[in-house]
Length: 220
Image 1 (cartoon, rainbow, N blue to C red):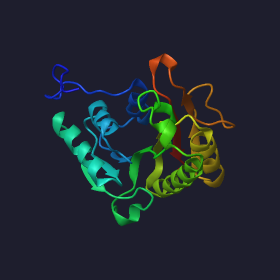
Image 2: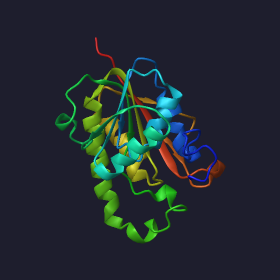
Image 3: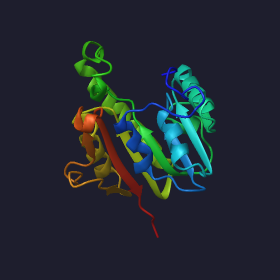
């Protein structure tokens, strides 16, 4: 990538088209407090700031301190600024005592089955039992992040998986147990019975990806 003209100077970034939808679907607005959970390596963090440079503050958190450094490097390269926090997204009380967020991008840890074409070793490294474990982790992070979202706020759930246990089934279960969560359909295929937008590998030359958009009900 460093060979691309202008890359080192921050004139461009490299990101799959499927991942680029995150910033557009999140719809960050001026003067909002935004959280990018599980942010490393930072492509979506940077894109959010590029899409809406007048946010009040963007917090980027990741459990892996080494990968979090890549977020810092990416932001430095393109001359953008975010607050980076090393922490576990399933336990936000350990690293965040501030206000609830206007918007949260939850790019959840997943099986990465949607990006096998770029990472073929996934086929050998991933085990069947990994999926149930990842689904439990995603569920715990979703519940924790929901508490950090202000009423009226938006949470965008994303994975680079094509497995329903991590995607539509995960979101449907969350909606069933979370009374103040409102499902926001992203297209005609995004229904209450099968919530979310599933992109399969190769669709419009994109990676496999999943998005689900939720808003938090404002109570009287």
